[in-house]
Image 1 (cartoon, rainbow, N blue to C red):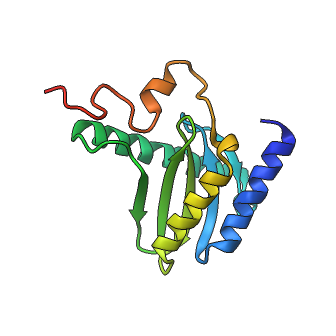
Image 2: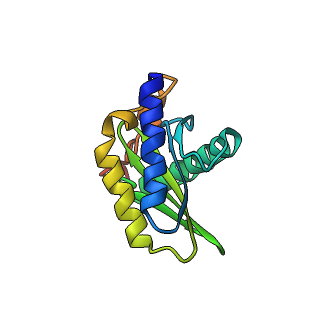
Image 3: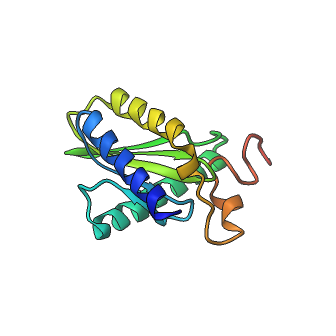
Length: 150
């Protein structure tokens, strides 16, 4: 991604945090967990940590979907005592993650995330670092996607 594209993406993430009442932080991560973009409210270390967490949750959700024939993971939501973590997939396995206040309107946060995903698809079309990672990490991928092998 070029410097200008990265700045544009970061600006869009800042706009999301400002527009979606209760949103604290927003990042975009690659299929294998690398940070692609972040809002200015997060420093790089925090953003990289959130990227690893979001990647792990998406991986667990995809595995659960495959194991129990749930289909493609559309969104992962973690409800904590004082915050929510939302992770929405897009592109070639890239994800948008948002941390929001516990008083947030979860429907509004999810809506704003989906609007952003549609607007910035070109940024979120993040190829994984390793050639084999796309098949194993793409949302809804895997040997059991869409059908049971039992």
